[in-house]
Length: 484
Image (cartoon, rainbow, N blue to C red; front, side, top):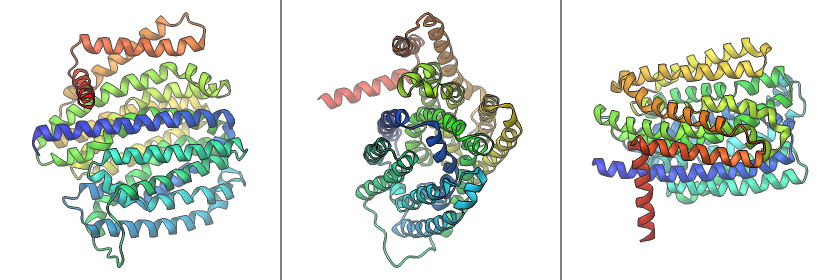
């Protein structure tokens, strides 16, 4: 594909990925604020204790086939059909197993109320399995706009259901129902936008060519979920539902922040990097442009989130959630590096190195698990601080693995990433000092945002940042095209 065509396709994908994730985070924010004001931390803690089981089961039923289909030179109907019937059958078996294990889960957390909640919540991952091949079709064909519309519709419908149930007094049952409605609606939308349909009879032979690649991604995803949900497991075991709820609330805001960037970049990263994977020099060039764009967006967004966390939490969901704001401040700093790490892993997957992706994630997850278990007696803040430090430092290992594939030097990558990180850090420090005299939260919150955004944009413009100017020019070009 010509360079101009690839650049245009990537830009359009990033634009729609940004619209999708921006709209998702706004909707999540609106519905999250409403439900958080109605419910309490124990309600969120109840659902949070079960999230790790649903996520692992979800990874098992998906089995890495979405990326495997995207990575194939040619994906046929037989490939999608085999994935559909395999994933749906496996997820049904997993649901029956987990539903039967609900008493054991409740016993682990010393909470009998989790038995019916678990059996109800786990329905979500079975329903989600029915949309895997349709989602993979949209992803492979860079139909980012269609995926964006699907997510937005599903969020609106499920959010309304969740808020309504919370108002009616259904507490954590409303949160669980909201998740089930979300996957149900998004699957219907995927079905509408994707031309592919399952058929009978079915042959599972196509899975043989994908299982070697997908199985490694499966194990990787499981360890990622364990790593990302360590605190819910440990806090649920050794602390109370309130601590789990406070952490989950902070982690939800952190996830909304870095998912905005990760989702936008991931919507195009793997297909685009896969398209140029045969030319390492060109792939390195494309990767560096994506790396600069990711850092340009990620650092001001996440460090800014850390800056305004106390005011934002207090004003939106109330002072009862203030302990989560202090947790969010630490998580958001580490969250600034997550989109960068995600881009590194996409490069490895595009090279077919799912085994390397797997083992590095396993080692990282195992390290986190051991360290967190040793630290739990010392308190949540100490655990989170070390957790963030390990995740950030591990980026050096990811870089070394990518260097082996495309020979991207550490100094070049550091210039691409840290220049934006240092500028964003400087901006947030100046903003914090400049607004320290303001006592009104209603004034302090918007002033921090406006001052930080203006200062960051000004520095980007004065320094002649190519990434900033290219992004601005593309947006202005799109605006002129739409107007004409």
